[in-house]
Image (cartoon, rainbow, N blue to C red; front, top):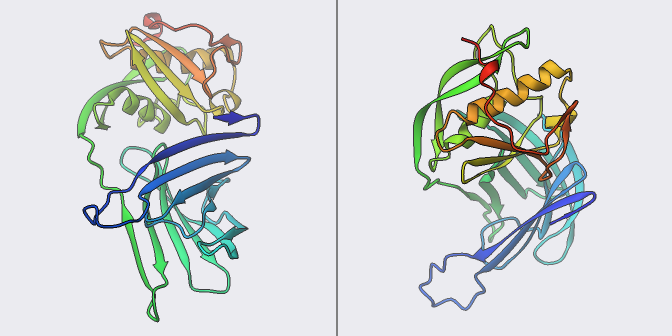
Length: 287
């Protein structure tokens, strides 16, 4: 769902009933995440999930750097309006090249806090809060233990030389989740080259929104930074496209690549129109 100034993602389902059916509580849950301006807002409807005591909360906001701070008013589970402060306290990069942001929320006038780790392209992967039960509050939380299949795969990535004449092979070992090797390859491009003689191919701040494969066509959706932050120049633009397309067409199941920006085809990167699928740039591969 989207509006001109916001994008919304919704999740609904049920929480596991640990009482084997004895509880009479409502185990349904609905979460919505709205990107509104420079902030990501969580709105939740649930009764038994161990999560925020606020029905609506700004999870994180830009700039995504340590020290970013904001305040807001939020209603707690009793409907009382509370003043909340949020702050990014840590920014780290995991072994897959994805950034993880630790965000601390504090309620003014009390010891209550909530702390989350938010992983790029994934969402909240751990949560901790102060349980205010009785006279002795205590901290508790959860983290997501992935049931996904994880492997280490050797992948060929392509990065441009410093003269923007050719793209060159760089073989890397990447962590691949649930056989998503094409996704891992694109994230590898975003993370950048390990070589001192090659250049990054992806504009600063580019995020991978989605990647799908259908009958040989790989559709890759990037954030708007992919076009807005590109340094420009026809040679550099061609290097970016050939880096992506040649990397993905290394996989035998992919023969062409469609690039989207925020879900839309037909955007332009400099002078190049992204309205049709692109095929492998064999003539631009350095030997």
